[in-house]
Length: 420
Image 1 (spheres, one colour):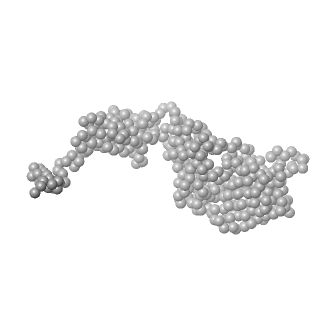
Image 2 (tube, helix red, strand yellow):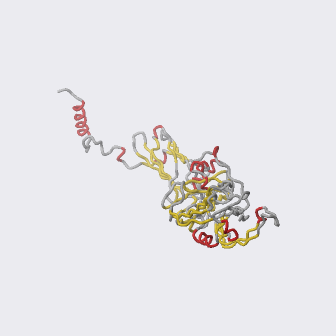
Image 3 (cartoon, helix red, strand yellow):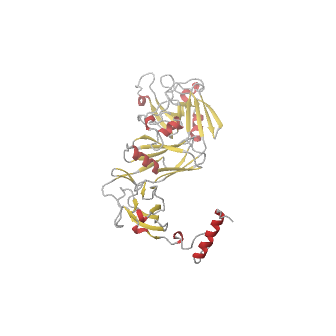
């Protein structure tokens, strides 16, 4: 019989069984290095805090280096903080070096587990525990989320106000990735840098009906820039109600109100006359005021002129900081549904205004179409966030956007100038 490959395999198995006491078939010897308990790899790897004493400088990335050669290589590293959160890191392809790729937090306790193997294939293990120090000279970046906790309409953006101006791109990326917004049901969303200290967060579409939204910061103790570290931040929790959208057609002189996509009312209205045209676009309701005194002087109209006014106004729903409202306008009721005679606000009868006032909530949406007025600013005069399409919105993100295409923030406008 010829000595075929199959025959040689069988013979070799038989030989191993004969020579190796206690060996079993072709599965290998039980004393193979891989079956042994891990050896102490303390002499095989070097930490950048090699003394193992004192507190590690959080300004520096954590590095673990294999001595290489006959000592073998690093096969795996896991680093966690005191809360069990993993620290991101990267292992070199040849197993000679591992280093963190995200900043360490100041004043934190970490545990690092290193797995190695020597040239014989035997596994090694080293566990290191250390604390990071707190820089003596540092500034803390605090984050304040808005709006206040409560229930809002589905158009309400989440606001993050920073205690320091941030212009550095890399720092902005770190901050943005540390500011988390989660909702139930879950939706896609992202941040937009309105200016150096303000970010807005909104979903791709409006928030879901009856959603729970939570904003929180993971920046505490994280180095953000030169002597700048993440500070304290209180979480924010809000909920949403029904999806209320009021669409005002300035040319048809009507407002149609929808709840969850179904029409619930159509109201005859008047909007801005020539020279005072109402802004087109989507506006988020900023608040409601049962009574407001509106004066023409607040929008630059001199007293005693034909356009001057000084009126008590009821059931006023604010949609811009510069003073655009939806409100009762009983003095112009004969023009409701037929002509535009206001100074920029949307006016309606007292009864309709009272109904609208009770139906609408902060965070609901008012959309104006077919007006000869300017378009609503995305920022600076209320919340015009929804006037940017999703691609434009993402360009305002430091983490995912294109800064070269970023829409410049609008100039801040005066906040308390009522128009009627």
